[in-house]
Image (cartoon, helix red, strand yellow):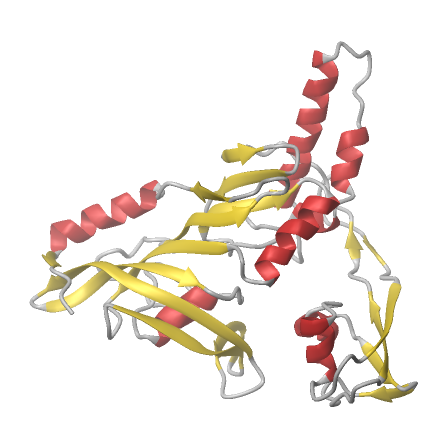
Length: 342
């Protein structure tokens, strides 16, 4: 059945090795060199580190030849159900689904959202595919072996996320090998994403790069903000493609965004900190006078990534949703187009 999902106690996992060189913090070494877990995962999973058998902090500086042991809690396993939820499929093969995620849909089950997510829908899709294959083979009973294999993929095959209110291209792995292959590209920044946003006002330059550290906002734990230290590096390139003004003041811009890292709320924070928040952003923006009912105008338009078994990158495109065209129609009726000149 559906509803709140039970949680099983997480098991402990362990990694042991020897530092190949010195000078790095142990958490950075484990994340960037050995790729055991990311630095945020080490904290989230209560990792305990032992260097030369003695317990040490994650900030401990390693020396070449140090013996390292790290013990962490495996992620708690939430059982979640397959659901028959329509998905806009852009592409599929035996290894992946590429979908155009609808605005308002959560990517993966978590507290408060155990049903109705992309992961639930993908499990339902796998079940439907297995059923169809069984019927086409004229079997008396469906063979659920393929579904079981897919269901066993960690985190339902999710390898990257879009915020609930962000729409657009999302790729999902259908087996463990594909999940590892795709995850490695996101981790090593070989996967490239392009977003389109409508923002209030305009950035200070027509194109540029935001490069800072993001961490939890100390005044509001639901939000993220740039921090002087202790955050994670966040890099976004942007380009203004069109602008509209009222009485000579630019009120709206369409901006193309290229995230070079994948931090939570990264694009929303970066635009807000340039003093041009994304229209319809309930967390980092303010209600718009001309578009008071607009929902978040942020869309993952393109994804460039190598698929398992392919020799070249593939590019997937999700067309702009109707809410963008509705907003731009309203903007054009109230504002004058401004030519982009440096």
